[in-house]
Amino acid sequence: MTSHFRAPTSEMPTWVRLRHDLRHLVLLGDYSAEEMLDVREAEALLEVLLDICPNAYALAHNFLLERQKAEHMKGGGS
Image (cartoon, rainbow, N blue to C red; front, side, top):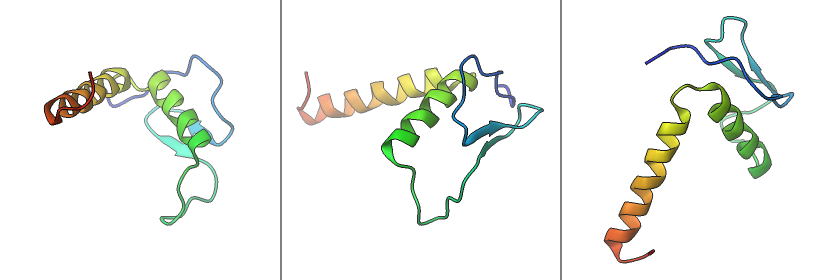
């Protein structure tokens, strides 16, 4: 597993920055522990992570499969 992000292939939101060594993602802005991202910002962050994080797509896919499996086991879903 790599400890570096990939270089972004799309334009990143102005409030998200990668450090020059591609090892740290920085959220710009004033987010305290009590504040949360709104849906638009969360969706933008997810797009960034799927773009730059080598394992993000597989992790998201596995997460969704587990959620579907849990729903199926509860008797819900199709």
